[in-house]
Amino acid sequence: MNVYEQILHNRAAGRKMIAVLLDPDKCPAAGIGTLCRRVSAAAPDFVFVGGSGGVQAVDGLVASLKARLSVPVVLFPGSAAQFSARADALLFLTLISGRNPEMLIGQQVSAALAVRRSGIEAIPMGYMLVDGGRLSSVERVSGTRPIGRDALDEAVATAVAGELLGLRLLYLEAGSGALQSVPAEMVRRVRQAVSVPLIAGGGVRTVEQLHSLLDAGADLVVVGNHFERHPEEMAAFCREAHGISGDDAALHSGRRP
Ligand code: 1GP
Image (cartoon, rainbow, N blue to C red):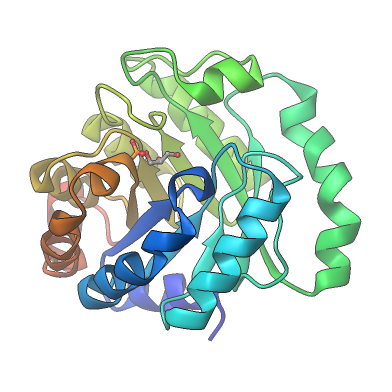
C-alpha cells in the first residue's frame, strides 16, 4: 500500500491518524538515534519532514530516518528545493488559501520534472493557511493572508474549490507554533463539505486539542513544535489519536468519516 492508500484505508476503518513533523534544521545528526527510538516506540502513522532548510539537510535527514524507521517518511516541503527521492511520498502542495501565483503553481513547475523522474509517490494537496493568532512563517514567506478564524464560509468554499480541482488531500494549517490551533468548527464545516481526507496542524500542544480536531472530522493531525520541546509526550499523543473511533467522531460531526 502506498501512503495515500494507507490514509484511505485507515479512514475507511474509522482509524484516526497522527503524524510527527520533523524540521531538518532542528534534527542534529547526533540525536537521530534517540529520536528514532522514540518515534518507533510511539508509533505515529507517518513522519513528515519539512521546514526552512535546504535540499541537503532534507535528503540527509530522510536517509537517516529511512535507515532506522519502519514508519513511512513523507515530505512536507516549504519550497521546491526541499526534495529527497528517498522519502516514501511527497505532499505536492498548492497554497489555495493565498493568491500568490508562485505558491499556487510556480514552485510546483520548478519541482515537477525532478519529482516525475524520481518516481516518488506525489499526493496533490490543497494547503489552507488559517489565522493561528500570530504572524506565521508561512504567511511571511508566502506573502499571503491567512483565512480568518471566523471566515467559515471562505474556508468551506476554498476547500470545495480544491476538491473540484482534483486535489486529493486538504490541509488546514494554523502555522508552525501557532498560538491557537485551527478552530474545530472550521474543521467540522469543511469536513461536511468535502469527501477527501482532511489534515489539521499548527499549534497543537495538548491531547485535548488533538482530540477536538480529530473529533471535529480531521483524519490526521500533525504535531511538530510540541514534540521538539516535549518528546516524552509523543507516545501519549499517538495513543490518544489511535484511541478515537472514526464512528464516534462521525456521530459528533453528523457525517460519516
Ligand atoms: C506546521 O502544522 C505543522 O506546518 C505543525 O505545527 O509545529 O505548531 O505543531 P506545529
